[in-house]
Structure formats: structure tokens, C-alpha cells
Length: 521
Image (cartoon, rainbow, N blue to C red; front, side, top):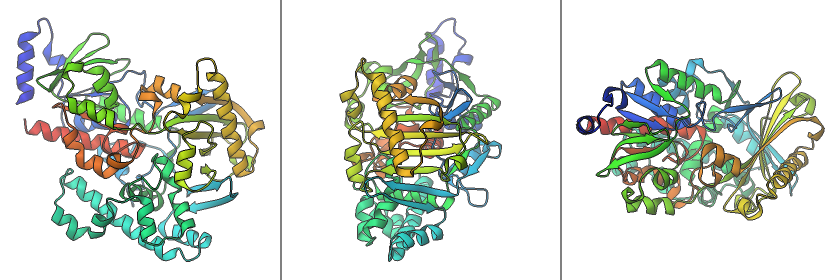
């Protein structure tokens, strides 16, 4: 009803405007992963949807760029929660519902990760599959088998509990949780470190298992066990996949399916103002002064930018301002993209993912990442052709580690020094020299990500996954964070936190919640 009321009110107020063309059931801001899925989900449900994107192409960071004869993946390391037709993950199911799953060209990665400790000069290579993972861990850490089995049992219960959360749209019944997921209720408040210690997992096994922490951007002592268990369980049991081309293939498929379904995308269209009246979204104004009307907006951008730049200050609820100030931004990214004139075989390297730390103590490494030259690297390596390969080196920087040292005058020098240090770390860990094989190099810093994506301070991980910004509190408190009626957020700053899989899943969830709101109007 409210949508009709707003429509009629504006029909009387605005002269010379074709309201049939400018009113939309939902407007989605940002054609990143979450925004694309939200828009397509709503369009397939029969809604009239407008998708606005300030860039020239869809995808945001889910894109690619070309240097010389190389096409570089901008940000995807590997896609989790995917699986296969026989053993589908959540992302597989989302893509299937959206009609794009059978159009994508994916490649299965046969191992999970290789982790290197620079100080201890140790290396651990972990396989895909629960049994294989347990056996490999036992070979590295004798007497770890029973604790690893218990770990996987807990993971399965966590996954089932999260599925129940999804079924109840974030409103689970306590008695059901207590009856069906008793262990989940016990471990839910605790960190990865706390739970693994309680199940008496040997220290070295904990260190190896916790390797993946940097993908979530918070050390094991602060990171929610439920969040970590859910993600790494899918990662190990389903196996990671990559796109045969780049993640831009997904973005293009989603955008094409959206327009084929009757949706409208406007590129090179930034939002100047979200119009709010009586604490209700009523439309928005673009940077070109076009006015579109709607009762529902899903923003695939940071709440910091929405509340701080897109809504008149006096119309932003005080609770929204407090929330933005309370959230702590997650990691900033530094990425070095290398086009190599040798194949993986010629280089003598066989794995896709490499975690390179000084130690396997995540708290120690988290502290180290507060400094610009930590030397810590997450690396991915794949063949580009028969005689070339692409190596991506990513290092995380927390807090103001980047801002403390970088000025306009030394920016380019610092970029080169960082790239050199990350290449050195990779060479030291793997024992393979790659410098003489570098044909193309591109370096992205927090400045790059802030300029390209508009992320506050160049943060690429949304909010820091600690305390109230861990997964469960975000999911449980999401409805309490709807401060303006009709305004929701999806993507890396949404309730599922950052990451490709999380953004796709969250994009669908926010679309479905918006549909629920519309049905009650």
C-alpha cells in the first residue's frame, strides 16, 4: 500500500514527469556481487527493478583488467560454497535459481591450500575432502585425528543451524535451537581459538587449520568459530573453484540475465542523494540530476558512504550515525599482479593457493599486519596459456599502517618497495625465483581500491569480524539496523560480511527480505 501512496503523492507533485517510467518497485545501487544478485532475484520475482552502477561495467571488484597479453583477475582468489550438481553448495544453488549456473565455466582446484612459515621454514600442503584432510593432518601432527573428527562434526552442526536461521529468516526459536543444535548453542559465542582448545586439538594442528583466518580478516582469538567453521567446512568438503576466465564472467552473466528478464541497468550513473521523507525512502537523485521514485532501495555500498554522503545529514537517524561510528573497518588491501612468461610447470610450482606468514600464530601475524611491510602474502598462481602464468600476491594492512608511511611524494616509491617485499616473501617461501620471469606487473594499494570502488579508506573487507561484527551478531541484529524504512544493505558490508560467496548469498537474502516487506505494505 505504501508504494501506491508514494506513487500517487509524487504524481500530484511532479509535473512533466512520466511516472510510469521513473517509478520502480526497487532500486539497487551498485552492480557488485550482492547488488547484481539482489536485482536479478527481484526482477525474476516480477518486480520492476532499476540497477544503477557508477562504473562502465558490472561487477565492481569482481572484474578483470588487461596488461599486455595478460588478463588479470582483480580480486577473486577462489570461490567457496560452490560444489557441483551432485554436491551443491549455497552459491551453486543461488546461481541455479537465478538461471546462470549452467552457463558458467568453472575449474575445480584439487587442493585447499599450502601454508608456509618463513621463520620456521615449514610447509604444509592440505588436500580437498574431509577424510583426506584428516589423514594429512595426522601425518603432520600425530594424535590429531580424534580432535579433527570432532571439529568436522561441529562444523556439520553449525551448517545445519545456519540453514535453520535462513529458513526462519533470522528469527529462530530458542527451543528448536536447544533441541536440534545443542552443541551449536554452546559454541556459538566463542572464538575459533577457544573452541579448538576446548576440543583438545594439538597446537600445531590448530595453527594449520587456522591458516585461512586472513581471508576473513580477523585473528583466530577474535574470529567467531561458527563463522569460520561454516566457511572452512564448505571449503574443505566441496573444494574451491575458480572461473576458467575471471570472476567478471559471473558479473556479465548476472547482468545479462537481469536485462534479459526485463531489468534496467544504467552505467556511469552515480547516486547524488537518497531522498527520505518521514523516515521512509521515496526515491533518489543521480549525479545527472535525474529523479527516480521508489519505496525500496538496496545499497551494495558502504553504510558509511550512504549515511555520510547520500542522505541529508538532518534526515539520518542518530542510531545510524552511532552504528557507522561503532563499526571498525576491516583490512585494506595491497595487491601485486604479475604476468609471468613461464608456465607453472616451468617454474616448478604446482599449487594454486599459498599462505605465507612469518609464523602460524594468527594473533602475532595480525599484529604484524598493522605495519606496512609485514611480508605476509596470500598468493594464487594459475596458467594463463601453455607458456605463461599469472601470479597474484595480496597482503593485508590493518588500521593505519598504510597511512602512517605514505605521502603524495613517496607513494610510487612505497608501491615499488611493497611489491619487492612481497615478491621476496614468495621466493623465500617456495624456493623459486620468479623475478626474471616477470613480463607485466601492476600494483594496487588502498588508494587504488578507494578510488575505484569508493570504499572508505580503501578497506576491501567490509567491517572487522570481531565482537558485534562477527557473523552471528550481524545476522541476529540485522533487522534492528534498519533505521530508514525501505533501505537495506547487501554485499561486503551486509550481514554475511565480506567475500564473494557471502556477497552472493547475502544479495539473495536481502532481495527476499525486501519482497517480504513489500507483501506487507
